[in-house]
Amino acid sequence: MGIVFVYSEGYYADIGAHVFPVKKYSLVYQQLRERGILGENPIEPAPASEADLLLVHEREYVEDLMHARATQRTSSSELPISREIIQAFLLAAGGTIRACEEALGGGCAVNLSGGFHHAFPDHAEGFCYVNDMAVAIRRVQQRKEGMRVAVIDCDLHQGNGTAFIFKDDESVYTFSIHQRDLYPLKQDSSWDIHLTSGVGDEEYLDHLEKAVPAIIERFKPEFVLYQAGADPYEGDQLGDLRLTIAGLKRRDDFIFGECKKHGIPAAALLGGGYAGNTNDTVTIHVNTCLAAAECFG
Ligand SMILES: [Zn+2]
Image (cartoon, rainbow, N blue to C red; front, side, top):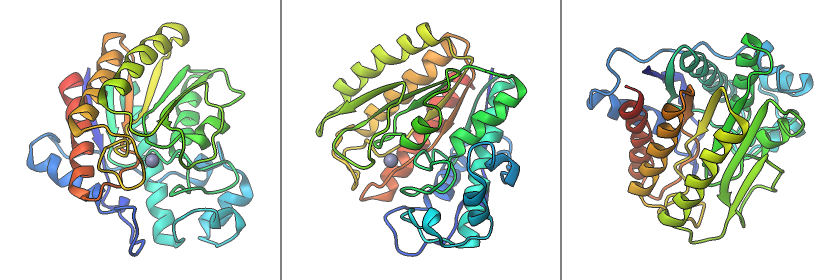
């Protein structure tokens, strides 16, 4: 077992003044570097190709993305569109693909980006142009047809795009625990836990401690893709869940621990994070990496 990190400077793209703190990727990388967590240099991913995107996304939409065209399909995003921004999404998706491949090679990998779970096959949504999670799942299933993949999505927001993409696919189990009365318009995941405002560490962890072992026992995943969103945090600007930084670390420890205990390779993605103080978002993401390293390193 081992731990691998995947990172590119190209995860950053200038999106102007925005609630999405794009600089967090390099800040997480720097902190991991300073704390000696990375060991050797992290793996630099190749961008996802047009063929990769077409495993999930529809051709007209992929062509819009490749040409950075503002159309109805791309304008449903809450981000601007430019070639630089699309390139960052292609790199993020390439990073998630690489993290999944590395994890399947024996252990755990973290892409220091990714988790763009609101993108649909034919349009963008939220801050998501490319559903890196779905693209990576389709890529790893090319290595083994029908590989049983469980998506554990702990972002504040429901993984609506991912739920939609895999709704009729029995090889992929989509689990999402998120705030109920909030963006997005909900799709049906395999299992949704819709939390009310104000839920804190104990109630949240109690749900997870029941759900994750049940999914492992019933679905028997061969691979886990973990979306470790930092936005269930009590200091997040977009939501009303009340998890503490320590509670989020316990969440990460638990999920990695379950994967390790059952010998299931796992790849983790950073997901959302919009704390009033970006340093808090960075700390939560760094803690996810620490939890993975402590468990699998
Ligand atoms: Zn989110």
